[in-house]
Length: 271
Length: 297
Image (cartoon, rainbow over all chains, first blue to last red; front, side, top):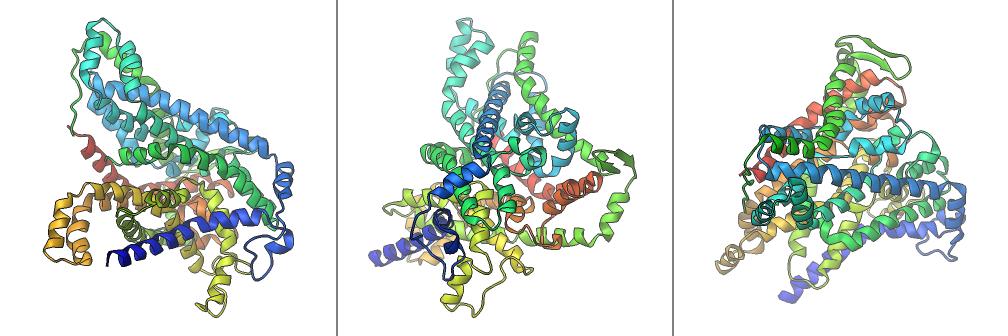
């Protein structure tokens, strides 16, 4: 009985794994095909001669290196800004008592009801007025903090044993000093989770960079790829090669930081 | 566990310090969340174009919405899109229940199911667009070859099939994410309850329906809210997978994007944004309440 149900569980799990991996494998296979194989019927699963030159061609046809660098700058910049603003703001919300604390916290949490998609148009006019249209800073700046990240780090500070901070206070350390050398080091796992979540979401972000960036030399990988799909529509092997290259960083980051990614999702959902 | 915020003795300088800690985040939230949110109502009452600027026209944009068939179609499609939520709840709950059993290699399966979640939608969208290609796509090949259908399906060009195709991609992408939330919820269920029901002779199905699912209600509510909000906001999948489809086959955000950045009518697009906001408000409000409950002392 037990083995039958195990067998059933395995076959279901393997089937789902194939469905999940299928599109990735197909992308890799397409990126290595020759032109005839792309349009052949029945479809070719494993190309006869692996055309690695597709990768070189796409790298030369499109300023791919440029896109790559832009994506890295935007993702790392967004991560740095978010961690800086949230690690600071979350601390007094968890630890200091000052007038209006719960009001400020409620105001911050209330921005959760404003989806990014709703305000892209007024944000765009703002970025235009600030003279930041078509710049990487214009892409980063509106995402330099979020209610979610402040909430996440506030929850983390609340779990730090307060005796440690009180001891430092008796020793005469300033609030800033206590924050920097006692509280912040103790919430490192939550900061790590925030870093990973922010990096992956910034790397994959599409609508906002699509709106802000106009000139190809400022495109992120996602925007560049979406333009490639339109201009090289028939040349699918090249698009596929480009997609494979730009997915690699995300998968590497994810495989090494999976633990933090999962814990970040759960902390954010109030678990 | 509930942890109460520490009470330090308050003083003038302490208040000032708290203010400096909060300053960068509050400045950013004011500039990039509160102000745009207020400004969208003003923009919605203008005929606004980035070059010529705006003219105040009152509620004309909203009156125009009522007569705009594109608006009604895209609103309808966005409502239809919410149907991904029940499917996602059922599928990811099933996957979570299978994967939590003591199975060798469960970590590998979990990682694989999570890959679509972390991969940028542009990339998975490109892959699916090619898989769904009506002439040479793999999916049509498999369907015709296995005899499920006599001829190829118009995955991308026939409404509402094309909308449902994109919904399928959203489901494919979401399973891993919601599975994680359910796995955490399942870990919170006391083993004794389920074991007792096994001793009482309850079948797996009875146990799931009467014990596991009711105890998972908080996780199910959470997944319902998150998934519905992301369904209403969907844009990238539509943009990448259905570039050639008429706007009547797409969703509200796609229409807003087209109005603002292809027709450069920012005022009308803002009115669409206000409708989108009201639409998501119901779900986001529930989400906020849920978070507040999680943090309340």
